[in-house]
Length: 300
Image 1 (tube, rainbow, N blue to C red):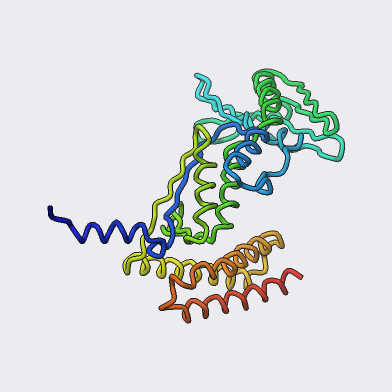
Image 2 (image 1 turned 90 degrees about the horizontal axis):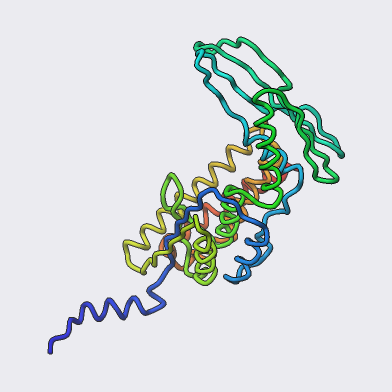
């Protein structure tokens, strides 16, 4: 009986942990309703920390989301377009008031009429009660906003959970693989938590996540080296632009600083993989540290 030694060696190499340098990872999550209890249960089931939970939904959050959701346009047979838009009118510690305004425009976009109170939507921030006083089509939109408000008081939307997933991913020293994003390399030091993240996303009816092993070959290492270098260069460029941009808010500066610190901290997971080009990588890390120091001075 003949034995294919090349195939046997390949199998043994795949089974050898030293041959494994990480995974390619990507995911998607469509819009849906996600209760806080569902997120808590799913995190617990896969073994991830509750610290990743988004902040509790406030009455104000649900009110803004529900009222924004009913914005729309109608096209009556007379060729006039009716736009129904939501505008903030008043907000304090007790109440929030938003109006649904109605404007009509002709086929050239010229405004024909404008009513600023087609519906008056009021939230009692203490009790969580929402009231609506409306006329015409605004009454239908106001009723829908009230229905959505009751739903949104108890449920997050897809974007909140996508942000939650991204925050989990950031703890795994990810490196973007595609310029447009969406696919990441995660080093093998985080195999366990990556598996949990895949299970978390895949637990939802409209979610899917995949991790594909990356074997330690010359081509794979070259790919990782190039992508790490590109990522570091991108972070450095972002920091330098922020240093020279006087119009950035403190919150935006803090976001850039935090992202840069995460990349710096995660580099140790790549040191063995990029060992042949370590000096060049560490030079980039040093430049990013210097830029972060300048940004911190700018914030303070």
